[in-house]
Structure formats: C-alpha cells, structure tokens
Image (cartoon, rainbow, N blue to C red; front, side, top):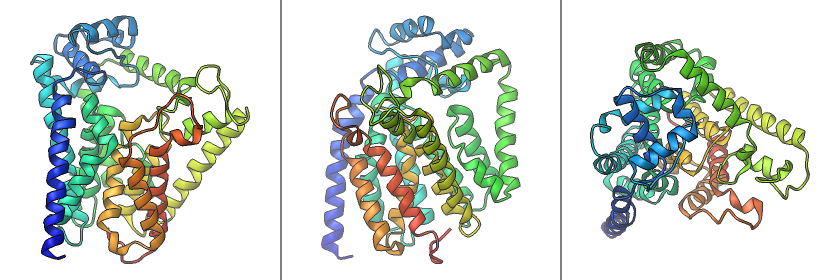
Length: 399
C-alpha cells in the first residue's frame, strides 16, 4: 500500500472518528433513554435489596424507570433474565447521569477493543491501515450506533463473544477463557446460545464443561438474589413474548418477523400479508433454520472457528426477538470476512460489499411502504452467512 493511500485512510478515519464523537458518543452520554433506563433501574433495585418478580410487572417497573430517569425514559423488563440486573450494578451507586456517561464510554471501549482483538487474531497482516479501516466500519455500523444511543448491552455481548471465538481459535486454544466469556454472555443476556450446538457436534466437551460450569457457578452463587420463582416468572414471560403477534413488527429484524409479515395476518402487526398461511410460515422458518444449521455442522469439523462465526450469524438470523441493536454481534462474522478479503471468491466479495451497505445505511421508515424493504439488517445477515458458506471449502481459510 502506497503512502498516499495510507494517508487517505488515516484522514478518512480521523474524519469519521470526529463525526462519531460529536454525533454519536457525546449526545448519547448526555441522554437518558429506554434500554439504559431499564438496566439502571433494575440494578438500583438489586443494590437496595428490592429486586423481585415485580420487575416483570410493567405497572410497577415503568414508573420506576420514569422516576429514575427524571421522566426522560420509559421501559419494561420483560425480555431480560434476572441476572441482567448485575450488569449495571457497579454503576448503580452513581447518579443516573454519571452512570450513563461511564456506560457510553465503556460501550465505545468494548466496540474498539473487540475489533482490535479480532484484527490481531484473524488478520494475516494486522497493519495500522487495516486497523483504521476496521475502526471506521465499527463507527459507521448502524447497530453499534444504536447500541450506544440507547445504552444497550450488545456491545458488551459482542466483546464477550469475540473473546470466546478468539479463545477457541487455533491461535489461542484457551478453553477456560472462551467458556467463561460465553457463560457471561448467556447469563447476562441469554446471548450466544447458537454456539452450544456447535460445541456438542464438535465434541468439544472441555469447552462445554467450562461454559456450563461457569454459568452454573454464577447462577448458584446468585440464588439468594434470584430465587427459582423469579426465574420461573421470567420463563413464562419469555414464552409469552416469543409467541406474541408483536414479533411480526418490522422493528424485529429476524427471519421470523419477515415470514410473519408475508404469510400471517394480524390486525395490529401484519395487516397486509401476501396470503394468510400461518402454517406455511412456521414450516418455512423451521426448515430454513434446520437446513442452514445443517450446513454449518457439515463443515464444522473442517474449520472449527469458521463454524463458530457462522453459528453467531445463524443465531441472529433465527432469533425469536432481534431488534437492530441485536445485530451488533454480526460485527464478528463481518470482521472475519473483511480480514480474509484476499481469500474470498468473487461471489463472497459481492455478498460482503452488499451486506456492508445494508448495515451502514439507516433503516427505512417502518410505517407503510413495501414490506420487503423494511428488513435491510436481516438481508445483510443472510448475505454474510451466504459469504461464509461460499468459502467454507477453501483449504486456505484459516482457523
């Protein structure tokens, strides 16, 4: 790479970084939003010994979020396990304004830290210009921006799952570290579950032992804080939420939501499907999930790390619930492909470039318009998974 090209990359990255600080980081650090408001209120209840099954009652929890945020935020706790309240517990001793400021900086650190970890593990040439380009991608990545704006938790999940994938690569081979990272993701947000079938299929019993063991130790140690009835209530609400017609909303960038909008009528969430065939939507969803997971399992023993990366994409695509910020995890397979650009065939490169555009451009309006245009993040995820499939047989694809 010539000096002129390097200089251009550095200038571009500097401009993007300046915009990122002014337009994303600073406004987020000064605003109290849903997402962060729910995490903070739950953590404060935990700190004061008032955390109970009532957090899953909107009539109890929403007024608390509004009071804690000075009427600036409103949220519920339904989709979160009880242990999510541990996440902001260290910051619950601070005022909500100071906690928001620190959490915003922490999110930025998790974004760049995870990208740097992936770069130095999977890039054949971890140079400064490549680092600058990857950092620019992270700053322009719309799901990551949404995480920071709302104070969500998925940059933490991205960092934890990055650690798990890196720790289990041939370069590291650290079963305890990877297991602990995945266990934390599972305990805090029930994230990363799609990696478990891969571990079982690969007979990675040590990795599975560390994952289940660390998660079990955390759950046992926190039983005084989160007794079984509380977990039972969470399970009930998770089941109800997963079966709600609200999952048809285009805000959920998932395959399930798209199929629901196309094939299931609902007077609120899906008023104009192509046809009303709920059974067909269910068959298509299950068939696609099994077929794509089958492909991942087929080449899992040839390339373990690539299988883990693909499984993360699969987990986002087929998640029962998945708003835009859930797609932050897609930075892992996306970064993997970018860092292996020279090894990609022309088809995979086309999929990757298109996916990048779909993840960098803003979401279209959710009201009205053509249903198929409302799911750019989902299409981006499918294209990334397709690119991984396309190159899975190449012997030089590293682990």
